[in-house]
Image: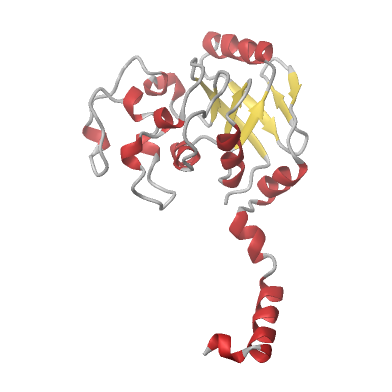
Length: 212
């Protein structure tokens, strides 16, 4: 998992509340569990004018010109600005996979659905909760200034605007540690490789019939 320390990122505003995981990555794309390749189908039903299915050549599909991520000013965005209850609906881990594969590293919203919030940390995404009035300010500033960027510092737990406003956010210490060091659940386990091997060797001596 890619570590997250500081991010100077272009912001894309998704001005919708209660965005559910089926909107983030529709159910027909859940057949794969490879974690990669979902970016072109993130927000598929809003992003394209036709119905998407796995295996389609997305480069030939008609884009919805009214959808924010299709606007040229937001190409290359790595910070998604959203409204309350982002990531509600089913618990599919494909949702953060799709957002990360698209290119987002952080999501800012007044609130998140619990399971989606947890899944973000497990997949290298930083979900940031800021007060609704602060999020509203960021929406206004993003709309007013093309190329609007935010500087996110995970170590300091701050979000800084181009005008010098700095907003603090809370994050669990263990989740913060994992993101800073790029550790997912597998990475955490692999830190104990020597102890695991020693245990397996001892068990082979104690109970060899288990390994026959």
